[in-house]
Length: 336
Picture 1 (cartoon, rainbow, N blue to C red):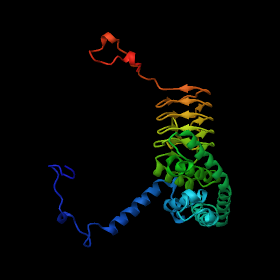
Picture 2: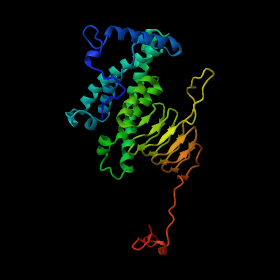
Picture 3: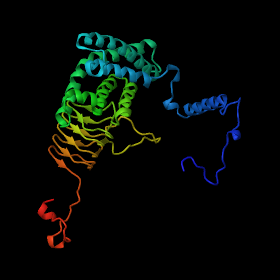
Picture 4: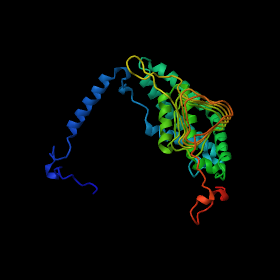
């Protein structure tokens, strides 16, 4: 029975719970114990210390910023309902002014956290370079995203229009976030980029590290469970299906047991490759141009261009007609 106690477990009544200042919890004591826990953590991990005084980028704020940027990129479909053709440009200008200003603030927070030895002027210069480069690149990103949407429309017979793809497909949400996050990652804001990527991951179940390089006309059909690692390189016109993993085969460590960072440990997928549902490709292997990787394949070695790779399948042995019981369908005759 849900919530039932075991026979050997004493029941707990409200009167048995000790009260502190008339409440069932001791705020002062819990707060003090949490402070000790934080201090112990920071003492034990000095190499990766939290620079708490500078603050930290906010996931909640970045979620609003990315939502506004999506509206600015596709105002008539992802913007608010009041946007029409006649006020579209004004909406985009106002939205970008606000969103980019707030994004600048989040980038500055990351730099204050990571550039602990830098002066305030140095942080401002780097933040200005990052936000300036990101803002200038938005028109180019919009054109690339148009190609991604068109690839989804062409690649899915269930898609009735590009508008349906843009509004309904979780892969498009993930790809929009990735294009934005990857540019921030390239420009030098990896923490902000990772938060943007994880916002999409939480919403779609598609996990794309912002460090992954993905070419044009990229399409993920269905999408749930897809994992694309940090150093993955994907060419143009590549199509993935749900539960595909492009991951690392091993995780070497340094002399003190910490995992080594920055190694090229994820696959290279060349142009025009199709990878079907459940395939797992691990390590710095190359999937050659035009290859087709079947469902549930496990790959840890490179594949030449044009290959068709599939998992071993069970073959059904057909019974002869005289072996079938009376009234049984003749499988051979039916060619099943």
